[in-house]
Amino acid sequence: MSAPQPNRIPVIEVDLNATKKRIHPRFITGFYQNIRVISMYAFLALFLILPWLRYNGRQAIWFDVPSQHYYIFGMTFLTQDFYFIAAFALIAAFTLFMVTVYAGRVWCGYACPQTIWTHMFQYVEKLVIGDRNKRIKFDKQPMSANKAFKRFLVYFIWFIFSMITATTFVSYVSGTDTIYQSWQMIGFIPFPDWSTWIWVAVFIFAFSTYVNAGYMREQMCIQICPYGRFQSVMFDKDTLVVSYDYDRGEPRGARKKGTHPDNLGDCIECQMCVQVCPTGIDIRDGLQVACIQCAACVDACNEIMDKVGYPRGLIRYTTERQLAEKEATRVLSPRLFAYLTLLAVLCGGVIYALADRVPLEIDIRRDRNQLSSTNAQGMIENSYVVKLTNKTQEAHTYKITLAAQDGLSLQLRFNDVPLDPGESFDMSVSIQGDPAVITEVQTPVTLNVVSEDGKYKVSKQNIFTTQGQ
Image (cartoon, rainbow, N blue to C red; front, side, top):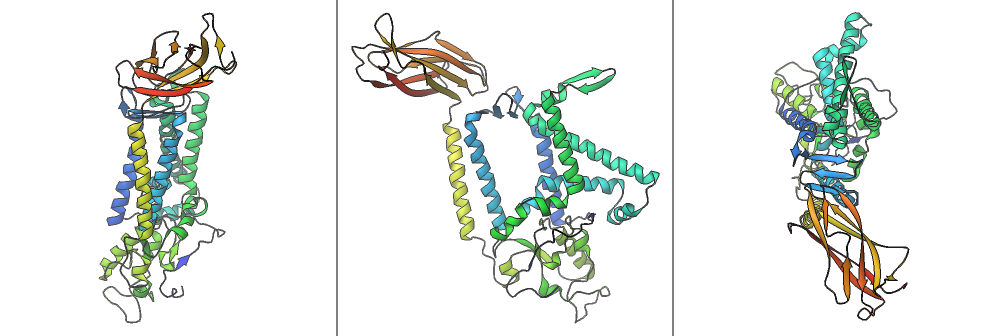
């Protein structure tokens, strides 16, 4: 590799058309790998546990798509509350951008589902077949009964993990009760009694998990995921990235333990940084699209430096300003402040909207066939359809009233409207107006809905018209 440009960390593009060999990374331990394993499996445990949490007798997090009700602990969202989902997506996106500006692709290395499941599947290979050298040798061996058995065992465990992943994912939509309690006996064999859409969804997610984590692996990060391409526009000189200290390490070369030839740098050409990399790159070639910043190479290199008696940090988390320009990193950058400000505004807006949100909705639709009519008593009558939606997770009884206004009265089929949690109900109502009092063509009217316990109250305005008599 030629020397990097002055005052710049070299950036190497990956040859996407090159023939790829199957990568068998070496599993190591170290400071960053311990953090990485804890974070990855904490996210995995959270994913598996959340569907089992209960709140008010119902699954705490349940996106009930068929009924278009979405439950998140004590809150119920309907399809018309989609703007909350959009707001949460924006917050997640800008949080990711902010973290990337400051700490690079830590999401990819420490929390991305592709990384977590790939790591888990590769660890299954390690347990069944052995560490890196044994797995490489195993691939080259001719087929035998022992190889076939180990292959079958690996694939079977992958299949079990894929099915657990798929059923867990689908249970966020269908509910755990439907997934894990709907069984029937076919002869003496218990078999899931699922609807067609559940079978299709489980198959799709199980197949995707199996293929992505078992075969695609790093190719998903290198060739399909667009996030790696974003880094060229999101990184700056103060972004933390995993980098090789070219000035300290070059020229590379092997040497006897405990010696340091004057004509060689600190890199002993042990290849450990390449062997532990889950995407198979050589970090010494510079910053690359395929680098997910898992810091496996950092821990591996530090371990080697300890063994040969050299200082740690030949490969480390650093910034271009610190490594190439030999200046102190500027932690607080204008872009970071911009993201923080934007996130504060978004989070503040969502928190205010949630705090101000009344879990009761009223919608008023006028009778489209006739604007108004005159009844037998000579009163002008307007007909409406009032739709009430109980967005709480408890049953409530509601009362509908008309805001006091001279010459107007509300006519109802019944006074009380009992609604179950998440239930909607359409009720026809009419407003009568005294023509001696109501002389305007259009008069604003307001309907109030209040729960029997007085806890929830909403209002909705519409128009009372004298046209169409």
